[in-house]
Image (cartoon, rainbow, N blue to C red; front, side, top):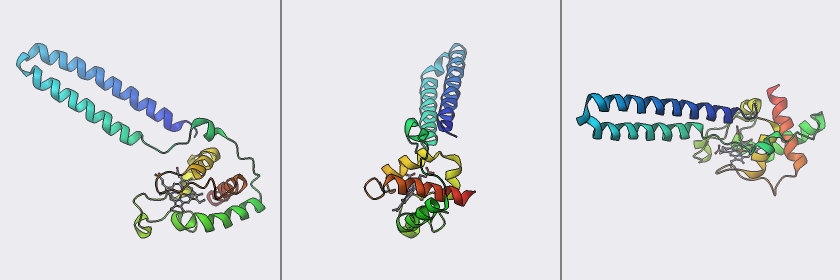
Length: 166
Ligand code: HEC
């Protein structure tokens, strides 16, 4: 589902511009009918457009790896050795936050604001490259593993996660 988020964003943007055009049209009609309401209508219209944009931005805000990184192919074969290495590395480095079976964890129980995702689920809709980049770089309460894990280990963790969701 690479690029799915971007398409969603584009759709939302188109929806906003359609709404915007409609608002302007309504506003012009209202101006002709009720000249005294002009000032109020301008304020209300602008405020609602602004709110729509803010709301839209929050919804569209999903953590995404850069497109090129997300397209990177997993060079490590998903064989039993790799899955075993991934499982070991996962329980040592990730289970603390993401849960023993990668089924997510309650952020409150580990004193965090952000809920570590159920990776068993989210791996299904993200590419290997997307996960690789996120694990290397981290974000907020998700630590960066660039210096802790080599590429082979990270790809193997991804193989392990994929084996869980099969
Ligand atoms: C200290 C807690 C913590 C540890 C340890 C941790 N993570 Fe995370 N992880 C998080 C949090 C919190 C997020 C959500 C970040 C956000 O969206 O802002 C996250 C997000 C992710 C995501 C993005 C999921 C998605 O659906 O986009 C991946 C992939 C991930 N972690 C993999 C790992 C792996 C693999 C390890 C071990 C090598 C690991 N994490 C270790 C807390 C942690």
